[in-house]
Image 1 (cartoon, helix red, strand yellow):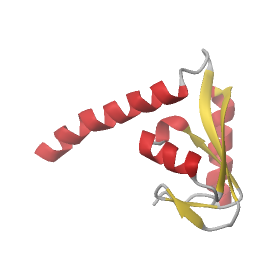
Image 2 (cartoon, helix red, strand yellow; image 1 turned 90 degrees about the vertical axis):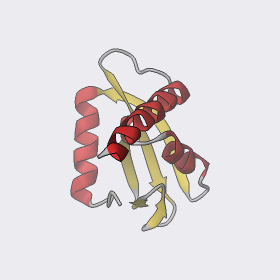
Image 3 (spheres, helix red, strand yellow; image 1 turned 90 degrees about the horizontal axis):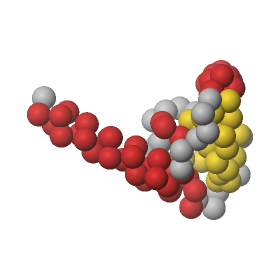
Image 4 (cartoon, one colour; image 1 turned 180 degrees about the vertical axis):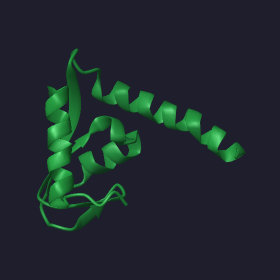
Length: 102
């Protein structure tokens, strides 16, 4: 599994780069990207988007974040929410089927 070891530093570097891009959240807060799709079922950054979806920023690579942010078919807004509310938003989206995680 030599390739898994090679990918771990790359994943850590991607998360660090994304943290630099978005900044650090305040204590007790979590950064969430609110994504509104202009067309249900639109695909970008390895995901299918429906309506309004909330994605914790730490689940995205820098490349995915930039793809979403630059896509004209998606409206993205970076938000800081209390940690417990971030979990509720993500759980609600999962129940609605707003994201396939592909």
